[in-house]
Length: 161
Ligand SMILES: CC(C)(COP(=O)(O)OP(=O)(O)OC[C@H]1O[C@@H](n2cnc3c(N)ncnc32)[C@H](O)[C@@H]1OP(=O)(O)O)[C@@H](O)C(=O)NCCC(=O)NCCS
Image 1 (cartoon, rainbow, N blue to C red):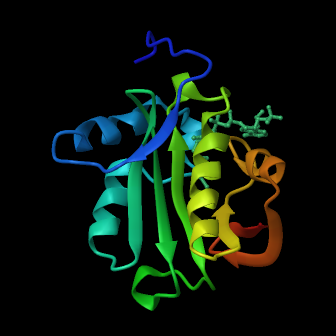
Image 2 (image 1 turned 180 degrees about the vertical axis):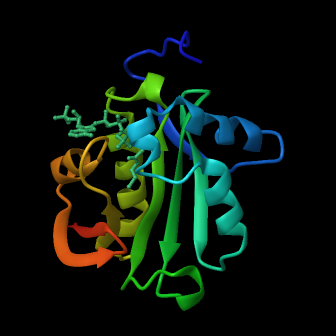
């Protein structure tokens, strides 16, 4: 994977995960640093959780034809999922280490925001841990603002658009 060189204008798309691609999606987690792995569940765990939820939506993130990441949303408040969020919540998100820092994460979130806007929705929630490996700066750069609420030890933040 680390030898894959992508053009700077690679197109970012969100695609369904199939029986043929699920193992590749799971292996993306192994590329993260130890500190980053403390910030987000492994993709295999997330996909298993999604199958026990009625409110999960998840996709592989692609740059052109290369699988580079994983994204998972949760919609609405659901006690059984342990999520009490007034809207759409970015539940899990990762870009594989070799493809980080190239603007792909930002573009993937922009695709989600585009779709939410088209549905008449104007907020996207998330939560993140703080400290080493934290994605806090990424979310702040996109315009997410802390709400003051916490999920366990994760700070909740919301992007309004
Ligand atoms: C957080 C993550 C998804 C960012 O993806 P990415 O593709 O590397 O981010 P991008 O290249 O699109 O970065 C967009 C901007 O955010 C900045 N940025 C990215 N990660 C950052 C970080 N950890 N801290 C501060 N700024 C960061 C970039 O410098 C860039 O800034 P610019 O627009 O001024 O150039 C990725 O680092 C990741 O998968 N981390 C591990 C898993 C994780 O923490 N997921 C979130 C769980 S809540």
